[in-house]
Amino acid sequence: MKKTITLKKIYREVWTKKRGSAQSVFSGHTVDHFIDGVPVKENEYKARVAEIFGDENRFRLLTNPAAFAAMPWQKQRALLLDVCGDIPDAEIIASDETLSPLRPALARYASSKTPLDDLKKVTMGQRVEINKRIDQIPVRIDESQRGLPDVTGLDKNALSAEISTLEGQLNGAKLRLAGVDTGGNIAPLTKELNGIIAEISGLENVHYLKQSEIVAKLNQQIRLLVDADEAAERKIKSIKTEIEEKNNRIVSLDNSMISLREKWHSIDAEEFQDTTESVCAACGQNLPKEKVGAAREKAISAFNASKAERLSTVQENGKQQKIEYDRLLKEVKVLEDQVSVKINTEANCREIERLTEERNIAKANAEDYSQIIGRKDLLDRKYAVEESISNAKGTVSEDRAAISKEIEEIEPKLAEAKEKYARFERRNSGEKRIQELKSEEKKLTQEFEEMEKMLFLIESFIKRKVSMLDDKINSKFEIVRFRLFNQLVNGGIEECCVFTVNGVPYDGGLNAAARTQGGLDIIRTLQKHYGIAPAVFIDNRESVSDIPGMGCQIVNLIVSPQDKALRVEMVNNNKTVAKIAA
Image (cartoon, rainbow, N blue to C red):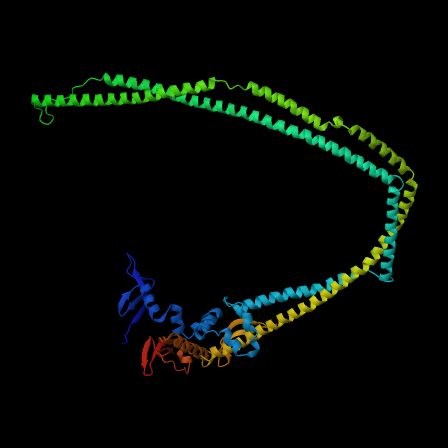
């Protein structure tokens, strides 16, 4: 069941008459709002309009042919995509088989809101990075080529043979030099000397280990005695601390018992104070003597009971403290007897001194090898053999100098031959590195071409989407055509929103009638999308000879020179004509 709702706004001037003035003065304008004839506040009116038609912007787009054109192009574009719907990437790829390689590439960005943009950014970034690496490779190849050693005029095999010969000569000279040092009587004398030194070292080690064992045993005995003394000292210190704590408690109990005795005598000295009232506090009459006496007896009994209870409490506390006091005195006596029994440490001290002296003697003996039996004879033999070796070496000094000079002449020749031979190895390594760089350059070039191919596919995808999206959106309109993308000089695509009416740009010389017709074409599509067809207001209707069929109420605002005031006419074809005074 359809329900009619009447919405009305009245725009009126406000004239007020100031106090003391005979004429009213214009003070501004006011707008009154009505729903079904009932006055309402502006916010209530707007809320009801929004409930029926959506927000104010939407209502304006559905009722004013010039509203869409007045919007920024970004909002125009967003509205068209919302009304006509975007085209899924999968649908665009399916429309052109050459775009199929984009399918797995875009799948990597399935969670992104803008997978194509992300793919393009990543691909462009990778292309730039690869291009940088490609640019660096020729420089690196050039550096490697400049670093190749010169082997012109060198024979690798001849150098290898020369190195072998020189190494043989050098090794032979070194062996002859060693033979000079160990030749004649030097070798057997050296062997005899080493045997004597080993025998001396063995005697010294046995002596040192024996004395060290004695030192270790004496150290253990000393440690046991020292530990016993330290344990005795700790025990005495602990007992003295305990005695001090108990004495402090005894003093505290003694002071407490003195206080309790004073408190007991104070309570015992208390006497009953008769405060019994013999006159009624309410009426002022004398109370009966028997009641006064009974009250006095009761008060005396309560006083005596309280006094006896307090004395008993004080006495009981005193007994408990006396018991603890006597106990602590006994415990202190026992502890003092323990302290008074002196621990006999004098014997331990004398024993420690004796053992320490023995240990020091053992230490000194461990480092004194002069007492070792047979060591002196071995030393005498050692000195004699060393003298014999020294005399033998004096006879070979000349042979030794000649062989050393031979070695000095061979070594630089060998080093030079090895350096020349190493050039071949370094050159091989350098040429291998150059080949690796060339292979890397080839691989990077292939990767760069893959990036170029991917970017070409992305551009093709965008162009395909532009075409399909333009076709989809323009199919919703009859005389208006939209262009949502611009082709840049560099081949790129940028977003835009430009529309034409019958091929003429809206902002490029289009007359008023065509502007109105284009606006009505847009309104007709929006009304179908939102499912709402409010009345459309056409201003300057006299300039438009023909309008498309709208399927809704049309309010034509026409300038009428013969009319001096606003005149409204109802036309049979569901149009309202408002003629406005010229």
